[in-house]
Image (cartoon, rainbow, N blue to C red):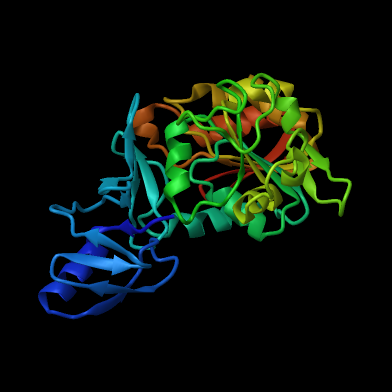
Length: 336
């Protein structure tokens, strides 16, 4: 991954250049680490490469090195989706200016840690229904989950993840395009039949018992040159990221195949199907008895929305076979 710039970092580099300071220590990966950067009058130098100063650097924007110049980490397909810096380091993302993760009082990364802790991930097979930037999955892996199957519907959000150093590495699988094809026209590391989510069920390897998705080949099994360290890391990560719609795929997932579920859907007005009784019935079906579910609801204003979304969610979950209680900014449920 190349350098990432924010207004804060760019100003530090500019200030060093104006002050004729030859080197400055800063972060080029959104505060994941610190590094030394050499600075000259009209450019700066890092890891043997030279980079220009931006003619204009905007606040609330992250820039990545696109090969010839810096470009915003943003895309417009049906909506403007962009990665947005925070004071905490770990970025959030916005869709048409709407912030998708909490940042006012806590880091979005720390917020994910608290919620993942509710489902006690150690050793569990976990379904992450709406992966976003992958912060839930990251904390599941740090909590030694057995395997995480994560869905993300938006190809643009998956692209953001690829540039975000806080997002976890995952085995990539496509459901919504031809086998092996990525949204950029390349090849995913592993892809099963596009209409067969069952191929994503967690399997056990013959050697060492490590969990791998069924249908995902080990690098050594494909022949040809030895796999890169990065590819090996992908297959060993314990996280499978599916670029597909969980609302469509969940009906094909096996009964009682997960120990826990993390459900962080977009707001009700955007993705009502992910709040439906039919979807909750499927969540109950794929969970093992006593399995845990955390459902993010947020705290929508009852006066402006005209409805009590958390209460409605809890009621539907109980009808699906869960016991429920309000926790943090959502509903914690246990499969009866």
